[in-house]
Image 1 (cartoon, one colour):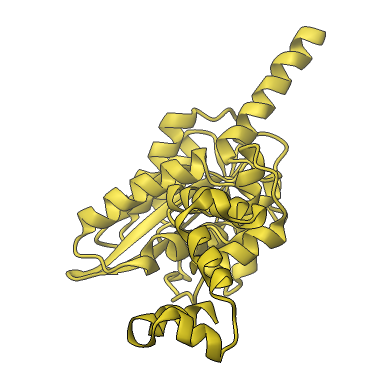
Image 2: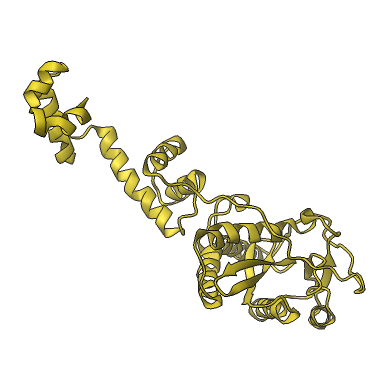
Length: 298
């Protein structure tokens, strides 16, 4: 009713419209005054306005990928006491939503002539400590100049991305560079297991020899079954939904820069439900602090 008066007031005048509806002119003026003066808003409207600003800030700061659950969890971490249903209601009003993962195109090219390591994981993607189990896989991104490929190496304990590389080809060098980055940065102790799919890049002699040289045990899942490298597939899915599918890409360099930014955000800020809604870096920091406390207690 108020909106109808706003739309037609310049043609017919406020008071004649109010006589026909009927509504008291004073009621209309009171509502109009509230809109121009936030101090006159009802308490719920003022609270909604405050929460909308906070929700928008969380959503913008996290690549615009968070849905209701993650925005709500981040607000709680920031000390904002709010119900999840309230966040859902306001995000709907604001037109904000999280990204959804789409279908995946197969990139694994198996080479039956290459010997295959045993599956040491058996779909049990859990680790008691960092640098106990890594998973590796790569995915693709279409650019104006053709496909580019993005490889990730992920530490299973806190789902932290420990190595990555962007390339214009699917040659072994590309995934080997991601592995070498992870080895250089993490310096894993003996006993680490490296799990991958049957991709020819991961079963190549150079890649396998590199694992053996640094004392890493290779592991490979069964053929044609994404569940046997499910965690690596999950990382690929998040990356595709939160980076690749959200814009058009001109060059490999554009993809590389966006991947650099995303990996840093993912490792240090993204809330992961399986970790109790903390980031991978926080989960590893908590583990290391507990180790120090345990050593002191001993």
